[in-house]
Length: 49
Image 1 (spheres, rainbow, N blue to C red):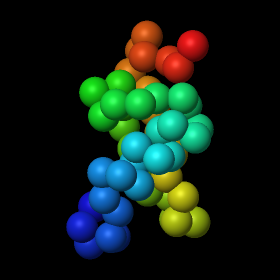
Image 2 (cartoon, rainbow, N blue to C red):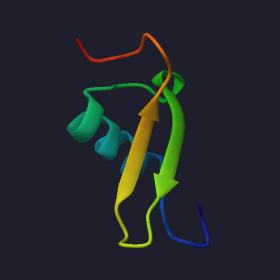
Image 3 (cartoon, helix red, strand yellow):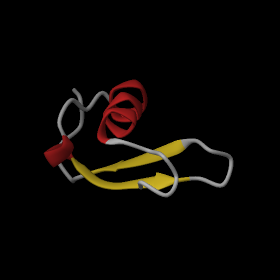
Image 4 (cartoon, rainbow, N blue to C red):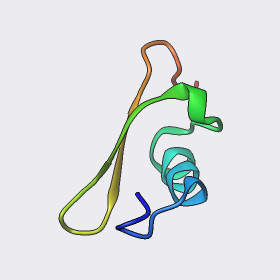
């Protein structure tokens, strides 16, 4: 993450906007895409409903 200059706040922002997640422990994977975006894969049962 540091090589790509992505920090925890960037991941949490993407998680909130894309999945409605609020905490790192709700995230299974965070993927830095080639386009520069961040894709979030939530842990099962951690949806923002």
